[in-house]
Length: 176
Image (cartoon, rainbow, N blue to C red; front, side, top):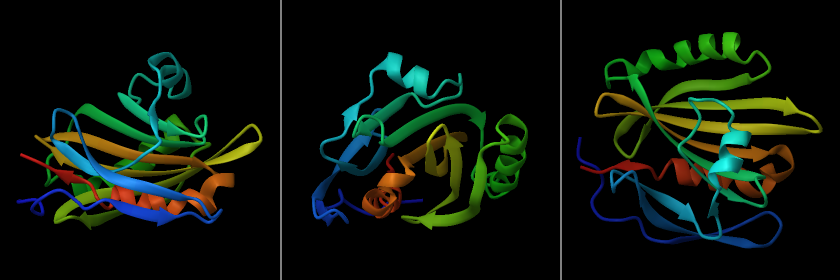
């Protein structure tokens, strides 16, 4: 499958609170993954990342804004996932979550086309202490392995950031 030609043009988005965010294309994983990246996001230090995403299967990279109120995550798993296998992933994801994290509510699990590539799309919600966390994960088959790009926000930031997350995830391209 050939990705759309050329890098995505920079985008400026107006947030609900009247501020704006700039998105510029950035490459990850040795130039294999491209997406629109929000300026102002900073890489989360390893010790904070491993505490916040306390699973051995957690993301290798996390970029954050507002002291972890909004996170963009990147995970390359060792899980075998061919493009043919990917349509079965939404049902498997629901089963895994039900056992591994019953407090996590899967609000949407479907297949989508993102830039000409078939991907899994999950939306989740979970209550933690005094806030509700909302997540969207885009699952891709790359070199027959599962890669996940995630967008996680606290519910208080949903009005400002939900559309930004959708725009970012819908900009994902796999190169080479």
